[in-house]
Image (cartoon, rainbow, N blue to C red; front, top):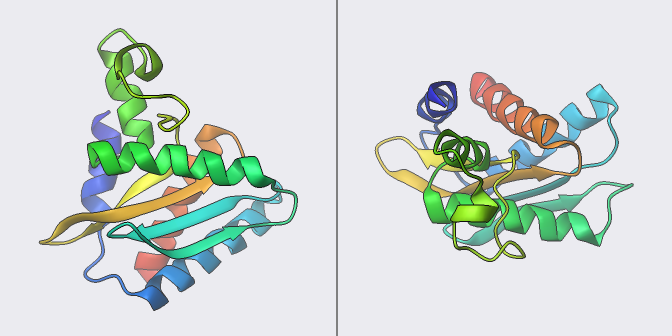
Length: 151
């Protein structure tokens, strides 16, 4: 869990505009193409406003439900969906068993990351879905890292 918190401390933006959302979303698409794992769904929100949303070929409507369920966890806890999953696991339970949240609206699995602006805090969410939860999480982290390195 400490590793996941360190990622949140490290992967922060100095600012985040609509154009940044577009470029970050395109970065995720390129990563998905490079690893040749099939299509992903991407949703980037700032202050609950959708700045970027895309379902690649080979995705389906269910992917849109998945990224909403993951991002709802980030909106609720201000931590990555993977961190929340591991937090419940460390307590000896699961998110579904103990969160008291509707599983049709909240899913604590990897793939959604808080959109954090330095000296401001969490202002939104960055979500990837469509592959395994580990790959979704990794693409999310790698895409943010890559975007921040080139900025």
